Image (tube, rainbow, N blue to C red; front, side, top):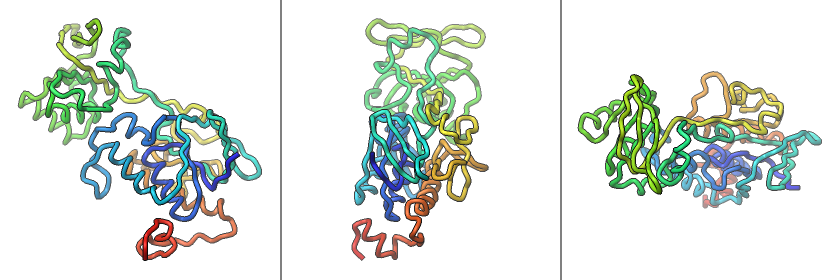
Length: 338
């Protein structure tokens, strides 16, 4: 059994920054994630997609953000347990006993759930024939945008992901953008940019259409799209991308006695603690009045949760707030000279 001051569930950006904050104030922590890689949704869903709302970073990809956060953690020895799912959390002697699918057991006073939206999978195209081309020429996320250079791509969806990728890939590819409505859910600035590209002939836009069928033997050759009035169009295409959001599954978290609200966890805004003492929730999975599902919000939540952990991990010590610019202790932990 491993003993640690805090156990973080989730190795996405919020989990990584929370680990940094814990180590900065002198607490030990370990991280468990059911994915096989570090980075959470940033790596799984949009490693190449530009992110524009990280403070002081005008633009970065999900992969770049993850790498920067890992570089920030380099002064510390963080143990990761990947491809492991937390199966059980139960109280034992005023601490939490946590067991994973990988056979690991942790005893800790603090558990921080930073698991994004929980276990997730993309919403998929209804036609059964689409399964034949999945992860070959039909994708629900972009892991390497270079494979699309010079190709014809049909992108389905009306939210930010579909619009962002249509705009990004139109620089070097032929784009069909298909949406089941005339209205789009993406940010207005993104919608305006997309419509400008349509006007310039860089994007072919089809609204009130949905996928009806796919054609091809070994590789994808074309797709049928169906209009609300039952009109069918056949589009030659080499790749299909679908961005319909995620199906969220909380999994075992649903059985931990936490206050749940529509698959999110209710927390306070002082410590981001749940209704269970010593269990915190940060990032997309937590819910409170005014909650914004932004990475920067997750960083704030993780910083406060980390400091709340100090009281339970070091009950005989008093936490003293310090700045990294002036604190000798913090500079030493970061491996910096005064």
